[in-house]
Amino acid sequence: MRNSTANTVFTRRNVLVGSVGAATLAGFSAGTTQAANATNTNEGSTTMASKIITRDGVEIYYKDWGPKDGAVVVLSHGWPLTADSWEAQAFHLAQNGFRVITHDRRGHGRSSQPWDGNDMDHYADDLSDLIEQLDLKDIFLAGFSTGGGEISRYIGRHGTSRIKKAGLISAVPPLMVKTDKNPGGLPKEVFDGIQAASLKDRSQLYKDIASGPFFGFNRPGAKASQGMIDSFWLQGMMGGHKNTYDSVVAFSQTDFTEDLKKFDIPTIIIHGDDDQIVPIDAAARASKKLVPHAVLKVYTGAPHGITDTHKDQLNADLLEFAKS
Image 1 (cartoon, rainbow, N blue to C red):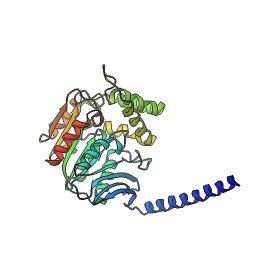
Image 2: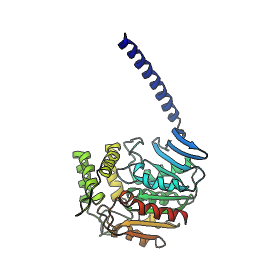
Image 3: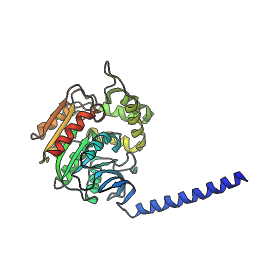
Image 4: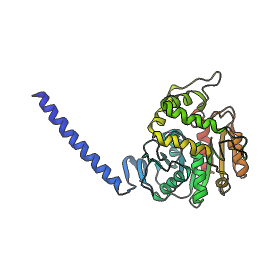
């Protein structure tokens, strides 16, 4: 009798959960920008998890932290990560009165996984759709690593009418791959190797990157953080296999030279001089030449993943620039 009652309760609960899930999915089907979940609303401040639908039908997940009337900061993440990789900076900026939007790029994290369109033009257009649908203005737009490419291509394609300031953090522009015109870049074979390793054992690839060069844990005397390694791996494995595979070409072989020339707003470039993933000379220092009015800050001895390893310093620098 007891088992029969338990089974009845369990069955009713499943029906209820299924009905709620169906209603939630129905809300997304019309392309709504309403929140899938909204929490912590208190006297004008919100912490929200939401989705938009792009012009080509892709769901883009985003987080909207801080006061609704705060000055807007939009942060674009690196490969193969998610909006969660920005959480230290988003939390700090939101605590200091800014409205902070972080999104999962198409094919990454909690966004949908389209088979096609895993390239910088689509990434930039997705970002434009997010900004337009939320009607964001006077934005401080910053990108980390691949995200730096995304925001550069956004400015190249959509201009700066809604952008007040820009930030390139450990960013891939102007071009990562070695070419005749870019002799300081990395050989294409490096990126071919990343794709091959992704096909062979994607999970192990992410563990190797995180435990090695990304955070500089392969340097003599470095003390590895298992938490950072686990977080990188988890975020990476949330992404689509095809999407993250294609994205290697997007971040390494896209030339952002002409995009950077359109940066007509105050810009900050921050990069570690021991970045083994995106070497500083071919990236930040080359970008500075294309955006001469930009402020370049070099973190001595810092690796690629400064959003975690140097988060206090980066938080302070971003907040100071956002307030300036």
